[in-house]
Image (tube, rainbow, N blue to C red):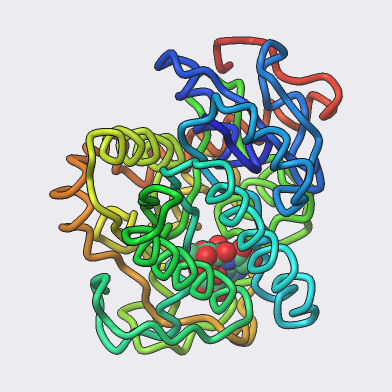
Length: 342
Ligand code: UD1
């Protein structure tokens, strides 16, 4: 198995589950936003760009890689609006190079990190996979382009000499939380995600948290999202690999729980689990935010037999909060070693 972006947030959680399940892994990561400590020492690790054609070809052509899981990518929506070229280079061109390298070296199974951002502003929720994809920012467009690339490459592979190429694209909804043993969590610098920002504010790393818009057409006026525990998302990748290895056909699948919480509900939960009434201010809407994003997850449950275990907002926030507390006590160079959360 080769994992790109395995030192990042979702990549490192999945890597850990793959190791626990007995897979042999090669991990590549530029360490742009990932951390070397997030990958166990014993793993075959290469500091490399997933779009580096020669470097990736060398790794893939060793002939021992059966499948690639491609996490590496930039994920900050506002940054993608300011600097689209960075997103097209890293999310589109690098992915295209990687898919090409897989074809060259006969790697026929691929799992891709896509995003609910491909839907843009859906006309109704929950949103199902066949609904219109109309991304409203460059980030979402780069994910959708790579989905199209995968679809076309897989279709053409059926009649090509290079062997069949099959893939699963997982459209992540809002990923949060941390590993229960306290050894992994979100360590992205300058994170923008709500639960991470809320935990940082509860710790006093930020003065206050701003709610971006309280005048949406939702019950409490704030946006609604489908928050999914990172450990359940990691499990979906293992299920996807097993499905492909068993001969399953290519699929694009929503990965969420199928229910939503408002920004206010999330903040109340973080306040409750942290015991800190951190300051919250109400500000204008953030451009590019859809009022509601909730997954219709029937397809992933059916196709992969995915069995989410941690569908509880409190559990998501509690693990995120405990990780945040531990993480601030340790520099990135000195990873959390304990197996027990305090
Ligand atoms: C996030 C990711 C995106 C991913 C998507 C999947 C970012 C910026 N966005 O989108 O990569 O594809 O999930 O659905 O990384 N909010 C506040 N105050 C804050 C932070 C957030 O009010 O300080 C609100 C936002 O306006 C939004 C909600 O919280 O309504 C969730 O925001 P966020 O955690 O950034 O995730 P998304 O933008 O939904």
